Length: 145
Figure (cartoon, rainbow, N blue to C red):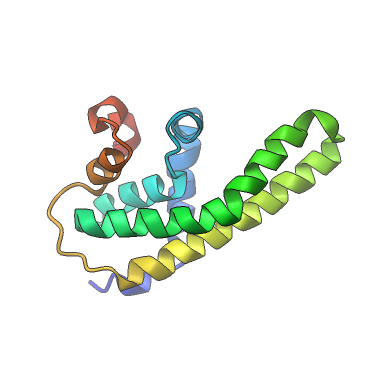
């Protein structure tokens, strides 16, 4: 099977399904542990495809995405959260919409980097990624089910 062809924006549709099943837990991981939800969703999707990345590949991917998000997405997200009580509902929604656009840009970056990474791994992507964030995957098994 050629995975390269599967690494397009459509894989995020499957990831959206995972996200909506446990949205509160994903957001808690993001807020409490700075877990990148897109990477966590990707790790689950890749495990379901039996496509394992090496731990070093996950480290590289995590670092590169983090660098981009620290420059663009994360400051904007912080501004949106700080502005919530100062904005009209329609203005706040516009900020949410722009944040979603930035999330999609992040997803495109992830897919671009993913295509360049070797996939000779043998372990669970989900476990490897949570280990990078120093979290025990056994505490979050409901996400990988």
